[in-house]
Length: 89
Image 1 (cartoon, rainbow, N blue to C red):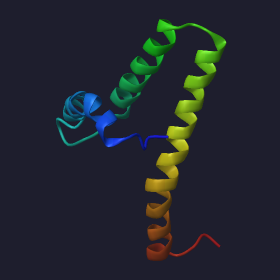
Image 2: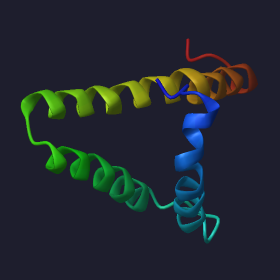
Image 3: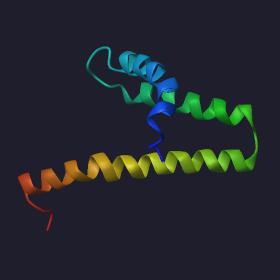
Image 4: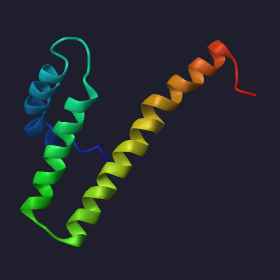
């Protein structure tokens, strides 16, 4: 769940802004670079505590991030495009 308390977000916000600045430096997101950043974080967290439980929990984090992104961002975009261009059927 990404909805942590506002005060808990503060310790991450500056670093996230720096990463976003680097990823968006040329106004074109390179998905390989996004993959590298996310992989580096997850792999480092796993290497810090190598266990099946930790690995399984990290996979769960990635799955929830994927689902929440789809639910909150992409689903509405697709609905808008369906309205704009017509349904498949």
